[in-house]
Image 1: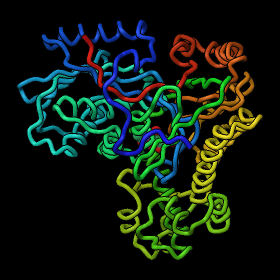
Image 2: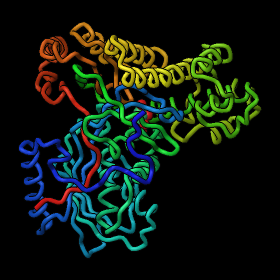
Image 3: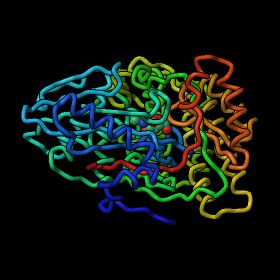
Length: 471
Ligand code: A2G
């Protein structure tokens, strides 16, 4: 098993454009030049450095990172870049190259994270790192943000901004931190904005390396190279249904986190474990020393398929409703009263098992590797759609069109409820595939068609976050 690097020996942070963009600088150099000019116009000086952090596509392992299980993503080329300079006014001056994201200035010592505007994601990363690094007298920063990760599309644009902000904050204050530590801190600080996700997005944004997907495990974060088979390519197709994780967190994302937590506690109590301290489904597996297949059987025998109510759970645990809410739920989910514990736990244990199978097929390379990998991706989608209920009509439609158009496997990627699909496509059928998906999904609607070039594209594993200093 090829382990990339363990905590403490992270991939390097300082890079040249050539290394970050795999030699294709002609395409990206004008972007940086333009940022430099805009920065000069705004702040009357040159940026001192650029921080960049990529988005990601998750190949397999959905909604299991926050349950303690490993995932298998890769970085995409699309990223957030921040041009950074210091100021002596103790202010954070934030500007965005997209005019719809308005400028924002605040004291670098007194600010609030209490909204969902774009700069609050910057502030999450800023606060997380200032606190972690114990920076008592932060330096004022002038910042210009530019991003090309599609928004609300499941490619992790918001985490890329949080990670990029964390990196800009550390380096802008003249400090350094390993990529592993940056990933750990950025994972935690995203909770300032109210989502209770796991660490997948932040880990891959920092630890990605070109040419390899990563198997990422948590507590502590570890990243292992996964070499994908030759002769295939991953194609991303955006359904163009926007998934607003922050806006719908109460009903969708955070509710799933709570259902998984409650399922873990029920399984732990039935198994005689210390259920009050158990919070994740992986802890039940470890506590009982069972395989994932045995956990799937346990879910079937212990949890009923009908949704649980708060009343039933209170009775089962011997808790009052207030105790249940404060101990197991979260402010945004306090009003939820239907918990599909069986289906959510079934998804998590079976998906965790698919990640291990996917990884071992990549390592062992059997003759039918591509078919097996595609099959695992298809099973993952079915489980996301039916057991986890995080798909939507358009995603299901797109996945089935992708399969009919030559993909060996296709699934939603990221949180779901909209956003993108990822498909495994043999290189030999790539052109036919692209044409069939374009005609079948995008050409039917003028709005979709106008966005097809940024919505349907083949991707390869890109590089992780970096600091760039350009002449
Ligand atoms: O959904 C989101 O992208 C989560 N990220 C990520 O951790 C993972 O749970 C994913 C579903 O697999 C954040 O909450 C930042």
